[in-house]
Amino acid sequence: MNGIHDMGGMHGFGRVEREENEPIFHARWEGRVLGISRACSAQGIFNIDESRHAIERMAPVDYLSASYYERWLDRNVRLLVEKGVITREELERRMAQLADGKDPATPHSDPKLLDRMLRVTRERTPYRQPGPAPRFALGDRVLTRHDAPIGHTRLPRYARGKPGVIVRVHGTFIFPDTHAHGQGEQSHALYSVRFDAALLWGESAEPRAPVHIDLWERYLLPNAPARSTR
Amino acid sequence: MDAVPNREIADMKGAAALPRKNGELVFDEAWQGRIFGMTVAMSHDACFAWRDFQSHLIDEIGHAERGGESTSYYERWLHAFEQLLADKGLLDAGALDERTREFESGRRDDVF
Amino acid sequence: MSGTHEHGHHHREPESVLSLRVRALESLLVEKKLVSSEAVDRVVAAYEQDIGPHNGAKVVARAWIDPAYRARLLADGTAAIEELGFGGVDLQVVENTPGVHNLVVCTLCSCYPHALIGLPPVWYKSFEYRSRAVREPRVVLREFGVDLPETTEIRIWDSSAELRYLVLPERPAGTERLAEAELAKLVTRDAMIGVAVVKPPAAAAR
Image (cartoon, rainbow over all chains, first blue to last red; front, side, top):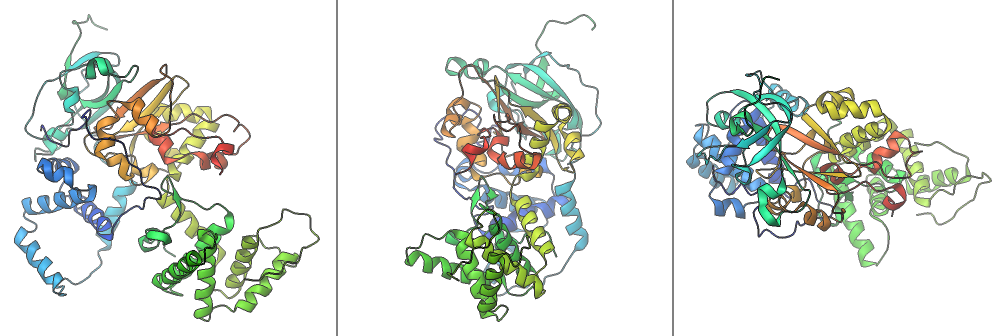
């Protein structure tokens, strides 16, 4: 989607600010949000592509004014509501109860869930899946599609309709554009594609600053005359 | 003992925040890591609640700053830890002075 | 704290007062069974490893020392880090050379090689970094204190898929005699993202 999240190349954001001795979390609730996110994904309540798209669907003004973990919180609530796990009314009611000092929930332990959550952090994510043979090879010239899809995609706007070169064939991976929309784990070939800065940004591009993006085959068209068999 | 770091310890804020560089804990000298480890190990073993140590640390930092002392973070940590041990009756200050003299004179030479 | 010092007859490096005190403390606490030295070791290791990018630093140091490992790392990052006991990431390692400097970003969100360098700092996830790193990398690097000649190619890697990128920084000059563990201590998280270079030991110590 043409969302506000797609900000590669945008102007106007200013200097990168860094915090000395930055803590891992700036407030306790941030860590809780991270833990909740991991618990949800470990149980398959939502997948990573859905979770990214949920953040992308925030209204631009909200996205820009939220902190990183505020966006995660928005995402968790949005998806848990959409998936029918909670309702917004329930959430409001529980907030009111807690503000009154009442907490109806009883703590319990769930070692199986904990084990699954910990495994997620140790094992490779299972996004590499068998799929159709790659169409493109190292060195091939490609052209990215000039689509403006309504849903989730991982082709940044700045790289639409641009010529590039395949610098690596990564294998086949789950395709986010379908996975984010409940269409299952369809895998396609993934490539590292190199783009010349001048072709991306025009005359004001820095010299010798090529951008490499990992792009699925579905984003790419051939950009060279037909070759004879290799 | 649980090897997973306790966030209550790792994420202390303000003047009590663990010194970091680039996101990494910084121990300028080995003894700083040792004193950190000792304090945390004892807290993990429930010799005292972390909150108790933390309030001693905050007090010590405040005291040092008001006195204009140029002591380092972990020096203040060490003072706070000694004070906590004394308050809890876990260690006698005299015994510590004596043991320190033994190391200084070479009568003891254990390295940790 | 005791103010008296008795200087021993041993000719060794004068140990700081603080270091002595802490050794004495550990000695007493161990004696009283309030602590075990092994527990102290484990705590320090766990906190250093969990909070810091020490996993990535170990990988970099191994690559600096062992050319065959370096080649395996660049060819198949995922398998090579598993050799060192690190998993949990589909990894591409990109090497800095005198003519090439690599920089990693995720313009669309904040993808980052957590398994090797921990949680990303706020600046990596910021709009400023996400928007500008692809567009004006040389200016951004200068803001981070890295001034590269115009002849250096800056390769930007926008982490748009589930692969993660780690920069293999150049080994600083004058480190030929350092052991692998000492080399690892020089490697910073920022160097593995590409917004810093690894400084030689004399410069790194302050």
